[in-house]
Image (cartoon, rainbow, N blue to C red; front, top):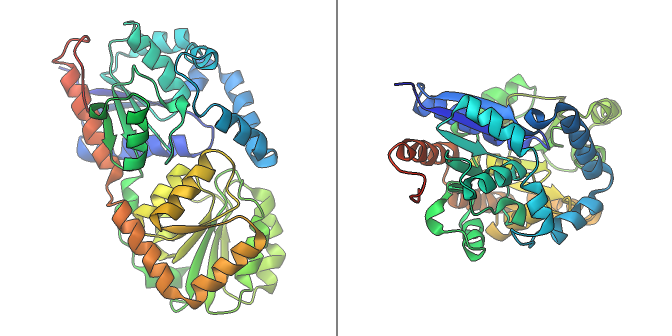
Length: 387
């Protein structure tokens, strides 16, 4: 008898969908190394050329015209499952996807991107797909693009999202609240003083970690870096520029004249270690970055969040008390000043993060996924499967 085969579909529209997939894969390998895992960019399977065009268009809109994205996001947030737009999306690339799935014959399909989940859910409803489908929701908000009645199991980040899905008609038995899956590496402790020393930083200063996202969509990043680099008080900064080479090069002068210790990086693979030695993170409000920060009990400052899911994620951070949101330059400066002069506020936010996300999100999600895969072997496709 062959081992369980798990097919993971993600998409490269922002780093979060891929990072969630990678977190699940790492957890699967840790829990059951015998499981066969196939991870694919679903839109690339449909059409590689179109995938590149759509990815560049999405990133361009987010960086240069975020209000346009925000209008689309909010106008479609409540659309019905049988709306013209949703029905169109649910047919996108269905032939290519079903052919690929039938050739592969997986035991369960995991989707970290909503459009793909919608296509497969529709195939489930019509009886054209007998393999259970799991959707991993990568934001702390409810949007119609995530909600499809043919999905067998939803992995969600918070009780608030779960309640929102139930209100939209999804059965509670099909929802698993695990936290948005983050790589198990983020559960590890690190020797903070040793790592600070290796970076040439001081152990008695408040350490800010500034992250602009993989594609450099953190607005006014250079201004914020310059502000922290020269802010009064015992502070220092670690700056991660990702793939934003323009930002990286523009920081030459900032580092030369900085009155506080500052180190910078381009794209890094050790975000978990950097979060371990930071006291506060300044970042965009992507669902995965938020989850990684919460797992590390790292207070979050979000500056001028992108309209849409990131604005909702930022609101969630404020509601649980794990971070602050600055929507103007002056608000950002005021928050920095308050936190630097009142370190007890940082401790309060860290404690709030610990209470909100107990940890081991990926492992919890994987246990539900593997249970569904194994149970499906003993149930007919007409019986309800729960996660």
